[in-house]
Length: 238
Length: 211
Image (cartoon, each protein chain N blue to C red):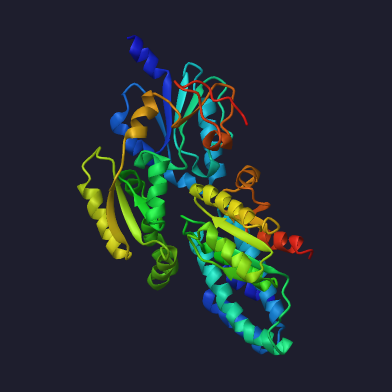
């Protein structure tokens, strides 16, 4: 009973793509609010949407877990008056799916021109591949093909991230077909649930930004400042 | 007439835009006037992009139109001047930083700097700090423009600024742009300024060169 009450004092606010990977790990008693992946294209709008969601959370909720990374600074400036905010200390969701920013940077240094896909992304239906049909409608087949070529000009690889949490065959097929269609090298890379597992339940160590009620998430949290262990507030400023 | 050109560009009517530009140039309209219209159109499109009213495909198409019109205008410019202008406002080295391959915005900045009288060295994408340093030294550039779209780009921007300083090129002015950059990112990277769009890049460059 105690655990049930304890868990419902936690809420998750996450991007649709992160939720897909988080779902298998979420206890049923934790409420999860999902935001459209497309919001990432307008960080200011995303920030606003997230702040509104945070403000609407009842005071009985002690911890709000954000299923985002720094995400073009959309999370910078967020604060809650009553709850602790927890965010993975990564640049964006690819870092979450790969388990760390280090793994992300490694992939980037090997093949910077990589378009990443996960089940969540594929199902969210956003991104240049999904937009293709719309482009054809608006500008015609020839122009659409030219535009896609231009947008993908510097990309050489389409990488499907497999976190091992679900049957991936269908997504593998889609990703392979997309890679072929748009002339990209297909590769499947292992993801990791290392961050995802700790996102909801902790421990929230230096891989997480933890901000107490009344305090604001800052850019420095993602760069210079290491949170103190066991989820206590990160308060030091340089 | 240039109003017509601006509309054609901002409405993504490529065939019309190229035809109007060609007609203007062949009927003796000063090429700089034609390029000015392009500049204005680009400003409108840039604002729409910022406002979320148009997206990357429109930027790409605009970039393509501008680039083709610029090519059309060049021989007319040379005719006017008699020879290619040796005078430039300054030299700017531009590139997308290491690990990042986004270049649509960068290419627009390059176009705008070019039509505004700067000599621009385009280093492309995924450019390591050392290449920026080499390019500045080789061309005697006064300004460096670092483009980066991913959040991951903040680190290589910082490394590039440091590399320039380590090479004794601390006098070179560095501007950053591309993704979500602001004062905090600027401070973090050590850059001299940040810009949200191509117009800002031109403004900064002109300011720095005393224009």
